[in-house]
Image (tube, rainbow, N blue to C red; front, side, top):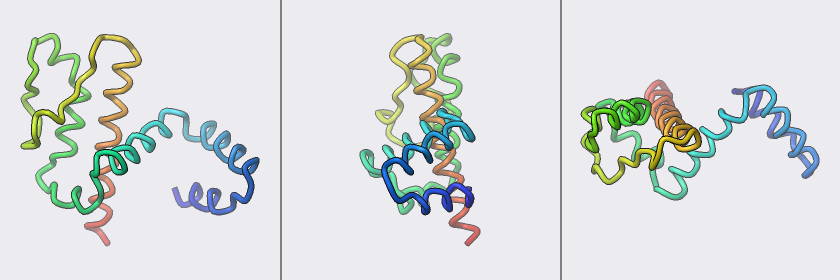
Length: 127
C-alpha cells in the first residue's frame, strides 16, 4: 500500500489522476476500490471514525462483517436477527433487499469495509 500512496502523491493534473485511477483499477481491481469507497462513506456519512472504532474491542466489526457474509443463510432460516450481530443497535443491520447479484455484492462490500475498519484499529494498537 505504500507504493499506492507514493503514486497518489505524485498526481499533479486531472489527466495524471485519471491515469492513476486506471492503473489502480488494473492492479488492485475495481472491487477493492469499492471497499475503500464504502469505508469512506461509513466515516463521512455514518460517522464511524477511528475514535469510534477504537472502542470496539470485542470483535464487533468482524462479527458484523461475518453477518453480512452469511446474510443468505439468515434468509434461508427466515431470520431477521443475525445470531452473531454485535451488541450494536439492530437497526444498523441492513441486509440485501432482494436476491440480486448487485444487492449481494453490496453486502460483501459492507463486510469488506468493516474488515478494513478492524484492520486499521489493529494497526493503531500496534503503533
